[in-house]
Each structure stands twice: as structure tokens, then as C-alpha cells.
Length: 262
Image (cartoon, rainbow, N blue to C red; front, top):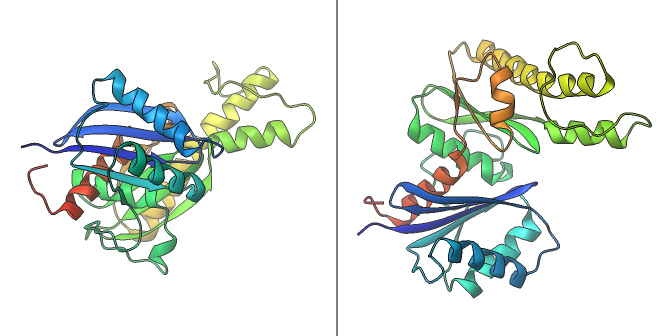
């Protein structure tokens, strides 16, 4: 009998939600992160999403949660207990990941980064660099032995865009879209070029330096809410995996549930 698993990742900008039957992702949603939401508000939202796909009364084999926003993560866990009558698995210290982590303090690594690394290592041959393009731009490095050896954290595109708008007197807020030319002919197109080509250049520069430091030919996997936007301008991104985080959460649930037929 196939398992039914609900997975949720609380990020700084959005909450990603997925439903798996066995290893197949059947449904996914992305809702905005709002730390003001109450347990009941989240519960009603979650119930409505599940109702829309006929799963409001589904009996879950498991629920797995990761969060980089502790206050909202705690509220979400309480929501799952109350509205789904299920004890969720929370990604954190003590949870089996199947991934060897070689860093100074593994406990300080964001849960989403671990989840992405788990999924990438399961899906692709090492060595790998997992680039998450979201609120922050993060790089997770998996060496040729399959071990997580560290990473890089940089501001994301939206953070850069917000900073330009909020910290300058005259620069406008712009749509995140590519201009016709790299060299902008207006203030708006100049900002768009700097944000998007700048983000792609950041990825390429960091990947190149990591590759030189380890003397390895890495496969570069991009994920996150802005991966589809930045990847076309990058010279080093090989694969875009929009559902990597959801897949990693399912794998972690499977490894902790002790099941092999999921």
C-alpha cells in the first residue's frame, strides 16, 4: 500500500506545500509567508487547499515540516496537530537524513539547505552544488564522496531589489524581468539588468571559485522560487529542479519512518 505524505517547507518569503502518493508528487502549492497568521488561519488555509483536491479527509501516513522561520514553524506544527490530528516530523537535529555533514556546527545549517542537499544527493551523482535562488541565494556543496562539506550564503534578488528601492531616494521598485539589452537604456531597464544578470553572475562566480578550490567538475542544480528566472542567464547551472525541497522532505520522512516502499 502506497504512503500518503504531506510535506511543508516554511521559507522567508513563501511556504511550499506538497502531497505525495508514494514517490509521486500529486499536488503542490506555494503561499506567502506571514508570521502574523494564527494557528486557526493556517489550519483553515490548509484545509481549503486539501479540500480543493479532494483530500480534506485523507488519512496521512506522515507529515514532514522544515522551517527557517521559527515562530511560524512552531505555529504550523501546532496547526497540523490540531487540524490533521497528526504528529509531524520536524527536520532538525536528531532526524535521520542519510547525509554526512562535515561542517563546524551542523546544527546551524538551515533546514531547507539540508533538505535540498538530501534530495540532490539522492537524485544525481556527486559532486554537486545545489543553488537555491530565493530570499537568499545559497550554495550547498556535496563532494565526490557524497558528503555535505559546506556552502555559501549571499543576498537574494528580491533582497537586492528591496534594498535599492528602500535605501535610495530616487530609484524605483521594478518588475523582475529581463530587459532587451544588458546595457540599460533607462533607469528601470538598468536596474533590471543589474538585478538579474548580477544574480546570474554571482552564481557563476561562486560556482567557478568552488570548482577551483576543490578541483572538481560539479553538477550544478538550481532550485527555489527564482530558479526559473535566473537560470537562463547563468553559464554554470546545469539543471533546474523546482520541487527539490518537497522531494527532500519526502525522502527524510521515508528514512525516519523506516519504510522502503514509499
